[in-house]
Image (cartoon, rainbow, N blue to C red):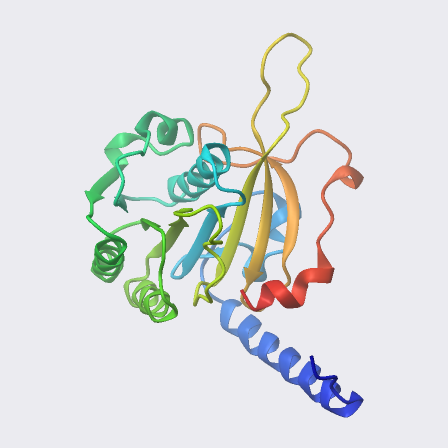
Length: 256
């Protein structure tokens, strides 16, 4: 690997800072959906998720547990947006009662079954351009950069939130490996739930990693999963036990 001279490295760092400033200015001032958790919203550019934008989520590891956590994370976001939600997918493995417990009842969801990722992307784009939906969710295995750019533009034009749930198709292929035009990219993993004073299982906990956000830094946080209104919460432990941001990988994740 070639070694950059100090002057060249400084110019590259200045260029990256300028790009981040431009991205931050583009995000700020747009309508956002806060999570309602101040410690989390402060880390997001604009104080929440830009509503007329594309956001991507994936389970951190291949497997049912993390995939279900990522699905519920998406459902909780959609639940807090007023109006109907279009959910398009190519596999019949979505559990409607689970969505309801995350705040998204069946009477708010329009399901569209597609035969391939390409059809899912086409349905998502049409739904976003319609402009009358609260959110459009699409379950995708693979999507090229050009496809995500089209969805981002459609979300902006229709003023609708696009939520892309990336699915692991093969264990060795990271769904976030290809670049994307998404404003944010999230990795969701299951974490041990808190102890209860009696026998039983406490509220689910997730390790939430914001792998990339336009105009801002990535971070990692431990949160309690959605309640019946789709809202996250901070665990009861002292703040110093929260997962610290992984700043060492910021450059790698910014390229994701």
